[in-house]
Image (tube, rainbow, N blue to C red; front, side, top):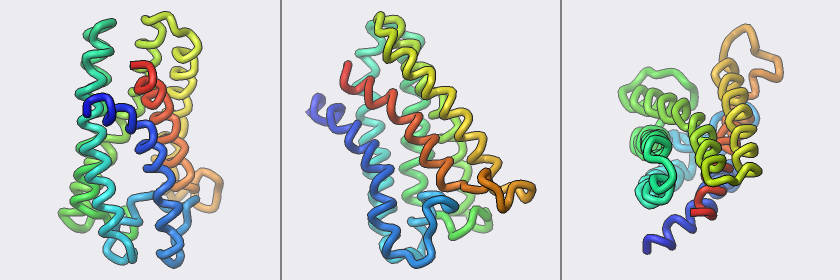
Length: 204
């Protein structure tokens, strides 16, 4: 069981980016470039229940995998293992489980308690997960895998850049520009965060 869960995580991380493309056709007017993935979980989306259940299951799986990856990384560095474990767990809880339980509306306005919990949980989870490629990269360098180490650091820089664009996307000054493509930046930032974790799962 232990081996199977961690081996499945790379596929589940990929599925997290693919599933919105499968659900979006049922939600008239949804735009992948300008809307975040969690909009598919709002009550007006036809398959919102399915997407929210997926987020909870996805988050639980990430939590289990974080516990499984911890001993492997700890053999090389206790500090890196603790930091990586913390950011992955916080993302799993705030960015996935809470986001699935407390759905957001069609916009980013935090008018309800559910939207506030979703919004703050997601922001904190996403922000901390941007550090995962950095910690993974440091681990790879410590085990003398310079290729994956360099790859992870590139992913870290890209994750920070895409996350910054994601935060800026809804600012009035950038409306009508490429920076306003909030959905695109969210997906690219997640891809940059997920790739080093996928590599870590295969090398554990």
